[in-house]
Length: 430
Image (cartoon, rainbow, N blue to C red; front, side):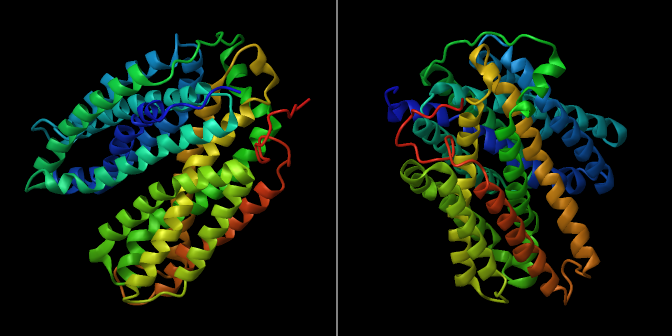
């Protein structure tokens, strides 16, 4: 068994997750308001451009995974992504003095560039993490380190803009510059101080065959089903949380505090899930997290106006469950890839993570596609009296049902490795 990674190696690898998370949050939270409000672009046009860019982004992930598998090392692919990500973020939040069609084209081009850089970097970064160690416990530590810094990046991206200036344009412009500086610093540490991995043989075969290879792994397909069900269950509350805080709890002014508590709890819970996965197995630890999340949202269903302390506890419990959702599935995926018979000749981590990231993005789209029309059909209208029961039902109970389905699918997965407790490494899939 390989020696455990040193703490500084784990930190060095995980650190790059911080700027990646800082890039993602403003694109979802600040960009629509900035272009639609500050710059006066039609909200319908902003939405159409965002939809087109996100669809292209999702569809390109498997191809980028394929190319990453054929690059001369994961680090080089990450390095190539950095100028795209930096230039895209600077361009998005420092647009020239233009309007109309020119501004729309500027937004579209900058989004395509930043999404390309983000996906290139994140797919290779995740595949690289899967290659650092073949030990199943080490893989959980590696993904936990990465996702801990991811949560720190989310909190930083949520808090920093308001501290960087007096107006939205100034805040976001300075945030973009600060992001580029942090991206360069974190990438330098990650690329120079993280564990090296041997360059794998380049996979043979045509592109479509290589992209389809992961789907030929039966355990991967089953794990992907669990990931989809659980991902949609987690994305629905994320889509509706601000509505719930404002219209059910009537505590919209405390939204930032609740969100910070949620993400901090996720980061704080990471060591717990790493320990539970080592002792009881990743599958059982993930099941426990799903049940914890179900209990938290079932409790939230009974809350009403002014229940700040109770909802704070919901944020703590569901945030802790989030830590498992972030740390354990990528680690399980790395283990599942070992079952691929073709991996003996040539690894295909990039293809696996390309499909994984595609599904992650589709989960967000499906969550909005399920939750928002359902709320509309149930008669809920944001900011109006009534409709709170419908919102509570969709925010709390629909995710519980999906989490239960995910837990059942996970429970039915094989009891052997990679889902069993990892006291030994003698399991042979043959």
